[in-house]
Amino acid sequence: MKTSLRAVSPALLAAVGLLSLCATPAAGRDAEIPAQPPPSPRFAFVANAQDQSVSTYIVEPDSGRLRWINRTGIALGVVGVDVHPSQTYLYTANGHSWIQAYAIGEDGSLTATGPLADSFASQSVSFHPSGRYAYATGGLIYQYTVGTDGALTKMTPERVNTRASRIAVDPIGRALYSVSFESGSCNCVRQHAIGADGALSAMSVPELPAETNPRAVAVHPSGRYAYVANYTSGTVSQYAIGAGGALAPLSTPSVGAQGGLIEIAIEPSGRYAYVLSQDFTGKVFQFTIGTDGALSPMVPPSAPTASNNPFTLTVDPLGQYVYVVNQNNDSISQYQIGSDGRLTALAPSQVATYSEPFSIAIARGPDRQCPAPLPLPWPDPR
Figure 1 (cartoon, one colour):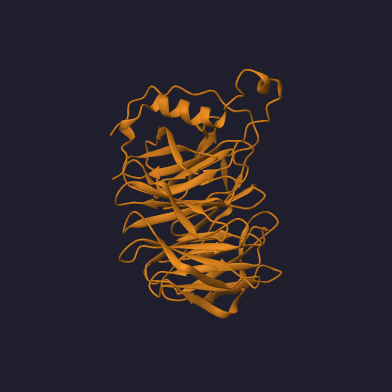
Figure 2: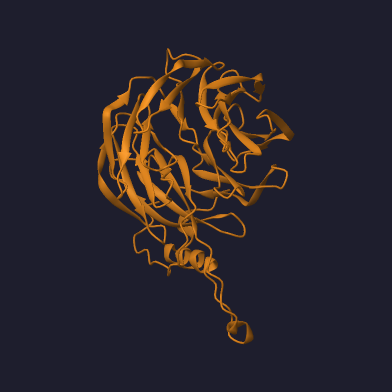
């Protein structure tokens, strides 16, 4: 049974959540010891499609549990949330025609910045590691420059006329990889070179085979390997990345998991991979990553989710926790990553969201002073 967001006062949640990050020494001898600078808060942002809102949570530093603190209404709707590499901007995509940038406040609040960016059908935004370029997809790939205020400006040409449902950018900034699950799309991964000006161009070998119905793509933090989750075949295709960003299948081109694979995420150290399945019962498949980039199933091979329709997952930027968005019961499953990479459900194992959560993004936050609790006078709409 999930806990309703109405059960706790918004102001109390904000105060307790922020104060737990910003505790000061008690009076007495300990007070004479200069306090260490407080850790930078980490905030999780969840897109709630039916509620047309973004929920903000604090990631508790000692437990990894998500503590809800705020809700921002998005009048034109939202399905995707993504954080800029600077950790200071959040981008929302509504899946129809626009992307909006928001400045992330020290308390996790969101303030719209810059004009709406036109982007037909885009559901997510990915960034060049420099933070100067952005790429949005939901059908085609739109390409933008990113201003100092976070605003997006279309490049010329404004888009790459390649079907793309999901994309991933090489962390070294050489290439972008895309897959499409639209009807009539190839069972392949496409590869695009990124120019000095951020513009995309097809590589000499524009695509490589994947397996049946590829749904997601991810790149290893080292920039040496890439992985594609194949929905129907229930496999993960694995590739080496060459010096120019070109892909080549590993000697074992794929590993098996289970049908219904829809998302893949790599832990920041590059030692573990997590693949989400919504086939029959929701599961997170867990793999170790060898020095040659090959995936090996852990024991046990998977961890259960709280729903048979999990929709997406993300790994905490510090590599300590995994979070899964469960669309059909409006919740987020939360896990700790063990020293061997295996997932263990936190207590509680899930937290509530608003209606129809679609995606989640975490901002680790730049070093900054801890904020004072922010009063939140608006009513909980549920």
